[in-house]
Image (tube, rainbow, N blue to C red; front, side, top):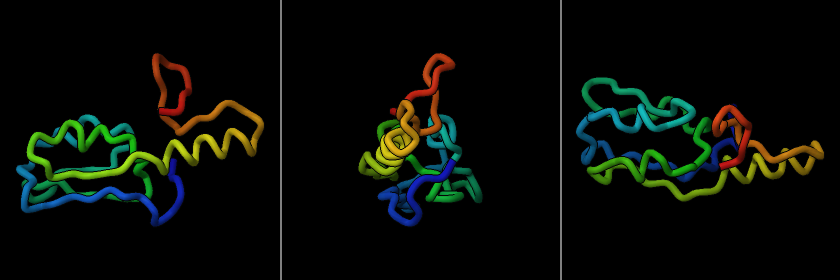
Length: 97
């Protein structure tokens, strides 16, 4: 699921990246891959800005401000007169992080 295009605040500093792969493990939308021994952002528009990658990067290589994905989920819920959802799930139930 993609959110608002070209607004994600996700930044990756390859100089600090060690290629440990933790970002690929914790990212719920597979925004990262490891290539050439370093993390790489595959499609920044898939980022829901949950912050899991930055909170779990021990080397400070990733920064992100929370917002886009969950904001899009809330707006979609309002527009569709449904519960907010940002495409992630908690215990099998749709939820907005």
